[in-house]
Amino acid sequence: MTKPAPIILLAGSHRAGEHKYCWTEAIAYAAGQPHSSSPKCLSPVIRRFGMTLNDGLDDEPRQLLRPFALRALGTANDGRDEERREMCAQWLLGHLPDLFDSAGLEDTAQNLRAVSGDLAVENVRRVLWEARDQAYIARDAAMERLRERVHAELAKRGAVKAEAAAAAVAAAAAVKAAVVEAVAAVVKEAVQEAAAVQEAAAAEAAVVVAAAVAAAAAVVEAVTAAAVAAAVAEEAAAAAAVEAVVAVEAPYSERYWRIRQAVYPVVRKKVDEILAPTQLLPSALELLDRMLPPEPLQAPAIPNAEILFAAPEKAA
Picture (tube, rainbow, N blue to C red):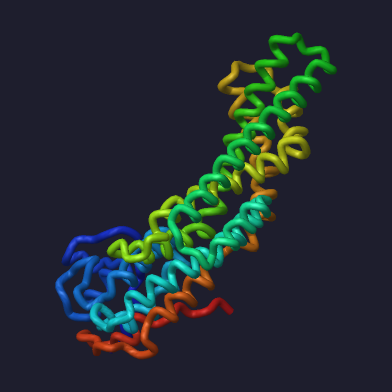
């Protein structure tokens, strides 16, 4: 008899009978329950955590959730959800400061650390929104410096004032877009774990801090983008933008895309440097491990469950 292959976890929800599963649908299957993303055997806190993480991860890292599925069986009424919510809230407030540090906002990170023992919603919300406002100010200032630098450089090269101004605007817009694109590409996994934990903490609205950190991932992305913009606007990206402007005699839209294409590699390198230390997936999986019992509280209702939910093989 052919050995069954492990289940491949997919993003999103799926119809009954398709034999396709996200993490929570796979748990329903393992429990012998009707196809559903809300199996009755699963803790709502763990469900929110797993569902958010499942849908946010790319295909390969998503499979790391597979071996946790059987241990989630029977957690719906095990009496640990209040403990789990507290674990989620503490994890989130413990890790957000590191992300702000990576974005160059050390003062904000310190403010978050100061309220980490105080889950009062107004304190956390105040610090997060202050960070967002500071990020926008930093980004706008960086873009203004970039416009001034491009304008001055083009003036040196003999460009007429109106042409230099238009080119400077195009360069700043292109660099700003490149920053946002690069951050979105790299930050997704770094902040997705924080979003997953926030979702779990918010389950059934039992932890008041969840309301304050609902936008945590977006705020971290914004401050990181601002930090990258400030870091690169006056240096390599500005130089790349100037060269691209000089090389392109074209309408605004074409010039914009040429500049954006030229500066993206420079921006992406800087984003990688800033965000590389903030990958939280191992820590998020460790949190999931602590939220689950060491052994399933409910026996799986399908054959070959251990094979179907085996951990991915490590690359040689």
